[in-house]
Length: 94
Image (cartoon, rainbow, N blue to C red; front, side, top):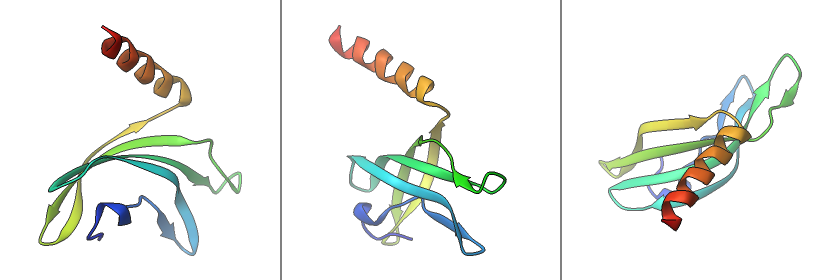
């Protein structure tokens, strides 16, 4: 587990293969509760390649000196990501 927000990642390795690879992250909030958005790719064993970019918003809580994931929302496609951006942009512009 990570002791600082900067250390948080969603990388996941199994059988020597990096199944989830973090490409980038943005820290949205820090503190006892932290929120991050990750850009990542997943390994597709059948195709032996990584997927297109995916996105995940995750919420962490610091307990006993370590951050633990409390919730997550995976954005399933670029189209869904764009809809979220459009909705937020519209609301902010109001």
